[in-house]
Amino acid sequence: MREEALKVASKFKMGPIFTPPVWSKPEGPYGTLSTYPDNGGTNWPGGSFDPETHIAYLPSQRLAVSAGVVPGDPKVTDMRFVKGSAAPKEKEGEGQNLLRITLQGIPLVKPPYASITAIDLNRGNILWKIAHGDTPDNIRNHPALKGLDIPRTGRPGFFGVLVTKTVVIAGERGTVTTPSGSQGALLRAYDKATGRDVGSVPMPAGATGTPMTYMLNGVQYVVLALGGPGFPAELIAYRLAE
Image 1: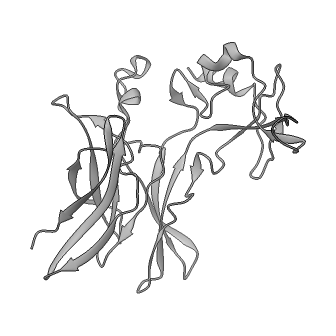
Image 2: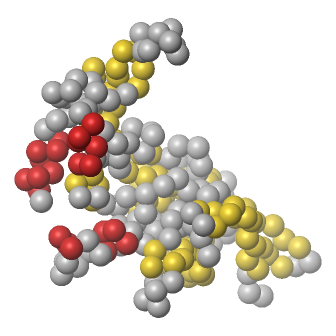
């Protein structure tokens, strides 16, 4: 599979950080192989900052995408160049002409596909980094990976984090199949000093927003937005045990 992945990657330009997009050509390169913000980094959810410890907690995802440009269509734009791909249409099934570049549905980059990173802003160093989210079904059940011991990879997708006095809270972006056969996701809590898992509760769908918290009559609540295929968007509130 590594040899196949290298063949896929050979159709793209690769380089150091800040390598720009390239002119996409049918014969290659289709684009610059990148983990730029469309499918990498923190993006709109931002992060959480602890004013007492000066530690920032940043969510991020990491997937390979194609960064290419093609001529702008004068019927719809006055830009000479626009984002796009000139990869042959028959290559779409291999992932070359898609937003996410994969091999048999498996991302080309190493996991974790989603992470939470704690950064000490006093010193500028990373204190810990963990994979956030369970391993997706298509990775856990992939026939080519059968028999391999795959640690938790995290799930790609943008998600937000909430920091409290003791923990960092974040919802999983997507759902996975449980041993009972049902689909679900978890709202997870991590020790903010070490990143260690300290608890989780099930959610009926993946998180689509950043958690918030408030107190009412001496009880603390955590609320976040959920949604997904077959599950209309909604807000769900959890009450912390007294």
